[in-house]
Image 1 (cartoon, rainbow, N blue to C red):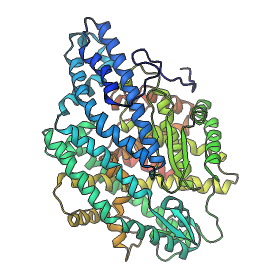
Image 2: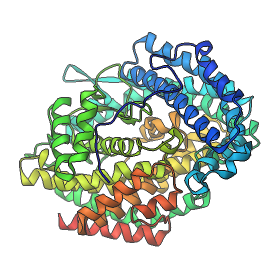
Image 3: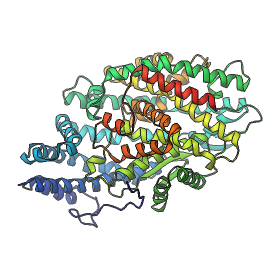
Image 4: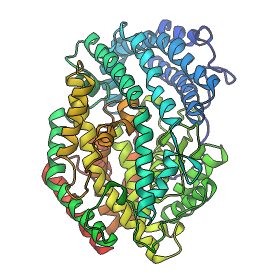
Length: 572
């Protein structure tokens, strides 16, 4: 396969080249044409699908830019209004057409003549959308799209003062790496106190979201929103029981490793008790890792790192930079978090993050860089729908890149000792994230199985689940108030419900690819590229197979992968 990052914006043949999404009145004729067009042959049908794909790409990219601009500046009301306008005035009017076009595709006699292997996952997804569609859900889904963004607006305003200077919570995180324990505790408590100020607003927002989501599920004939969401997310290849099995495997095979990690950390810091403000710290005399200075430096070093892995990877980042598709540094008024936003028509995605000069920012950058490469590799696929790959493989793209890139982090560190510490940090994170994934996932199962719960019941259940997966090595005495709202920092609960177990499933896939990489880097990268190039044209087990992986959530498989990771950690 010849790889090129010289990605070209898709040429339009159905929608005029200068058309911009402004009002529904101007957009509707394209959907009307598709709905009313007669299809008299398989060739007609395939041309119709290409035209539909083109309109979808135009609309999707417009919606993405509205969201990108709003998250880059949550203080600009005009940007928020543009996003809200799309959600309330355009999206709801699109949905009945989408359902009509889905039915037209499934009911066409020529659909049987299509290459069933090529179109299998697409047609399966279309049938699922038809099954889920309800007119009554259109206004609810529009309201949810707008409501979900309130999380970023609330969290984006959160700042604290340290040493007379104002910092976003992301920026303040760097003080938790300080060897000054008093400063660490002070900053930790300030961050938590700041979160407490918006505790009620977050609770109210979440309760509101739960109520509307439950109604969406009931309208569509489901017992609860969890069951609805599993279908909507296209979880054809695993069930809620597999999720429960994953939760148990984490308790059995991951928590013991975490106890060892924190026992080492405690000994290294020379502490009698490890407190939550100690977990990112270094001993006195050891400076926190400073892998880069600012957004420009982070970008340049990432390019250098990717170049040594595979020049194509570096060229993808260069192309995005050329298009101004990066917003990397944390600042006040910017939404929290990080993402890679695929742009279906342009091809080159957009990376958004809140870098503050920490090691975790390097991990975020290479993680989102993995997603970006997935966007580049799947851009050549014929239809927009083919590029809608399952999240469980999307996160393999990003998490495997975190692990692959470790062997090339000389780009960020001049000293061998710093590089060693960075790798330790990464592998600790690879392991310690599993319980949090299990906690967030298990919490959501309960939340949507009991949608009528009170805030008090929610808090009690959260604390119980948190306790179940918590390490005994960290002393949380006296911090119960902070612990009780720890879930509020997880934006996925608010913005992308049930999208979290994917990180756990994908981390298993990423470790599997990293095992390959440690013995044969070239073959591992070929498998990686091969799987990502398929987009969403194959089932999840088939995509894993293309990457040389097993799709397996069993405790035994997880045990094998954890033992490998622990052994690699010991080598460092």
